[in-house]
Image 1 (cartoon, rainbow, N blue to C red):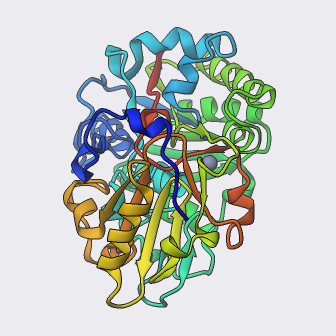
Image 2: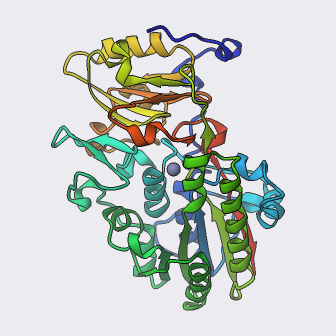
Length: 398
Ligand SMILES: [Zn+2]
């Protein structure tokens, strides 16, 4: 099946792997945030990679799932408090952070908590191949189960901070307390589960005050959920944004002395129209599926695992079929371009697809049979476009 190119014909820049806007690992990515705060707290071996931030004794990171920089900027009337902080974002520069690749929750939460880019922490996608079993593994739900520690062996920044005498705490939904993702990405210190957003931010403020030096994380999920279901400009999405804005203000107003509150997100989002030009269906496309053993990742950030010996053919075919709609790279090209960070740990190498495909604009590579739920989502994320890659780093000091 040929894919008609329409809006894509206008793209001026040549489509090469090197033309993809790679995340700012080491200076302005999510993985740099906690090490920067921990360095300011005197935790050993941490470096203040985000040089614009001024250290504080008490630090709170409030992560709003799915609230990208561009979506926040597009809705000042729904988020007046956060909007008032935009101009002084990222230590007064007025600039965002980059999430990391792929821009997806499991990957980003691991980047936040470990302070490492995906190539090191080893959660480089929504679903990736487990090289030991040859099966796809869902990194968000940790299915099928595999031992968490060998999968992500590094200590979290919370653990390092706790060991250095900093009061460390996470305040999130009770349902996340014992999940493998929480264990490998966010453990260290005290986990406190609360169902309501108000209870969470109130408790986060208490936890900040509980130590002379503190590092507290709190989380709100519903902006992302509303975006996936209804789109990033839907009434439901706007309602969740308004609610998140009130939570941020409520927390800001309770900050104990010597505190810094940082509001950020794991990724942004982009709505994808429901037609065949924008939603290419892997399960109906014999050209794309030829030679493919496993399809991983998600619609805007695919890991493609080829049958033995077919990797080059799959790469050639995907480039031809997808044209300018996706950046299509071999595993080694994507690694060399720095998509997953400056280095790839050996255990992580085989989790990355033989072919990696990242969407350039509002297109999706769905799989209607193997991923019926994901294929029906309105809002999506994963790739390197500004709408999904840029996240806020808003700051409030007391
Ligand atoms: Zn999401």
